Length: 353
Ligand code: NAD
Ligand code: TYD
Image (cartoon, rainbow, N blue to C red; front, side):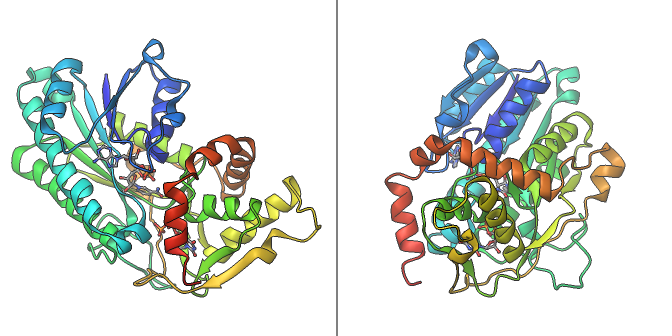
């Protein structure tokens, strides 16, 4: 049994599907079902196919204790987080609550549980903390990509709360010998990503005839990784990673935001041409920049390749085609997650532009 937190969100739900497909493990999945968590992401899974869903919050110490006692997992993987930078700028409090206090509660319950295991179980137990490259801050165009030794320098409230959680995880290994591993990954894209993030927002706005907002000059750079590749990296880390270590995960795929959005528009032009025959790229609109916008992220993923043997399977070209096709094939999912609360966020976030 493996305990997953945040498994109704984007990466967590892809990882639950990955584990069920690739291993014989069962999953107990604790998720608070915030705006970003969606049971539709898990609709094809139930107890018969090794998935137990628990609606709950990682800040709930009693729920965590009861769940650990009942299911006795051999590993915990912490995906639960508030994950959107723009929301952290508009309201950082939820980020402190979930990312910092929630990770602390999960660590604390996990450490108590681990301490009481027998020797063999204790040796085999792992806690994997899923984090981000944004903790390292920003790079100039000619800087070398982030290695695991790069100093932490978080710039957004999101990145600062993830950095705090990474430090807590690190301290539990160094202080208590608790077998935790942190992975810091670059920007993910793929199926089931909530359409507040650049790629699904671009696809959704293109298809609904809205403008496609590019912050600032659009020359900011991100290192894009297809979500299935991230899932494979996490599984490999779970099986072969060394407790106390940090692994950077990235796609070796640096792109400017304009390149990403142009690629999406080009695929849509082929797959679902606009009725007026023009390109979706006509909908691109430059809007006010994000405050404190990091210019460039790039991951040096050579440590995980050297020590664990993981490398991404998808190129940006293959991954982005699959992603656009998934959104075209799953318009009911999009309609479901873009009701009510979603519209309020979009109206507020893009109001002045
Ligand atoms: P997401 O926002 O899509 O999903 C987060 C999930 O956590 C949701 O299902 C939500 O309901 C759940 N959740 C939130 N608060 C909770 C709480 N207090 N208790 C229990 N569940 C709670 O996020 P994502 O993009 O899937 O990211 C997952 C993890 O990966 C996060 O830790 C994020 O920091 C990290 N990460 C994301 C990316 C990316 O590009 N998306 C890149 C690197 C790292
Ligand atoms: P995002 O998907 O929010 O991920 P992150 O901020 O964690 O990297 O944004 C990716 C890049 O796209 C980032 O440089 C901000 C930019 N962006 C836009 O230009 N327009 C948008 O509407 C959004 C949501 C993001």
